[in-house]
Length: 379
Ligand SMILES: C[S@@+](CC[C@H](N)C(=O)[O-])C[C@H]1O[C@@H](n2cnc3c(N)ncnc32)[C@H](O)[C@@H]1O
Image (cartoon, rainbow, N blue to C red; front, side, top):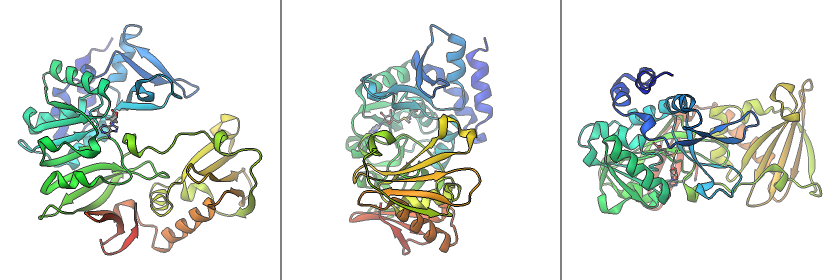
């Protein structure tokens, strides 16, 4: 069995040079619970217990992948929804890098999870400068114990990170490791002038990009660009309602039918295109269902759904023809909305997501393209 030290060195080698030392100093396996959840070939989560297979458990702890540590908010009655992970190390490293940390900076992490990232933060800023907040009481307590035992006893608060942590504010940095669709203004209020708020930001349609906001010199607004893929689980209050296609697309639903030459590769499958569409089309999720559950077969349906209005569209793709049949049901015409947003994105030159930015002010927030005056969406 490869020992933890060897695995840790291997993981650290893959990190940005400035962070290698921290990844060596903080042993990830000390933060991972004895039972984790791994995907089976049927894509369902199965428990992997340390006592049953210590070598595999350790490999999982040091894989450059997210490790699922809780399902269904810990109540065991849900559909197997992953509600907490130790985030993917290279993504964590990218976020830490973007946070521009240095010793002494007071930092708040939203979403303690296992506590691993809080220890990495503390390795640079100092244990006494890190506060981490977790909404789930069981996870918060477990992380506090792990942090203590591993030698990084930062302050763990059990609470709603969307409200920040007023008792320890102001912070130089706020770093969320759960994604949002709108920025809680409290994060701006609790960050010092010229400080940084860093968070994964997504939409119902797009899994998310990293957003780095700089707080203005008077402390009242924050502004910055998106940069890089950052797919995280949502904060609890900003999750989209769960629900499978078969719950939303019912056999007795009426629909209109049209044909289109637009292929999902160009819109749903393109990171920048789908980022822009998600900004312009609110509350629209997408699910791809392959015939016979076989991605290789080339026949599939893309479902667009609004879980609030009960609208859906199905977009049928078959190998061969260059036109595809679309059906639309409900008060919203979701495919039409997607096509309009996609055409807009093409017309403005198919900008990369990095050309978009967000401004948060006391009265609201808006997404812009290239310059803050060029508003293109309100999240
Ligand atoms: C991807 S995990 C964080 C990983 C963690 N930073 C680590 O190093 O293990 C996201 C965490 O955010 C927590 N969370 C979700 N909504 C929250 C909220 N409003 N306030 C605080 N924590 C929240 C979840 O319970 C989950 O544990």
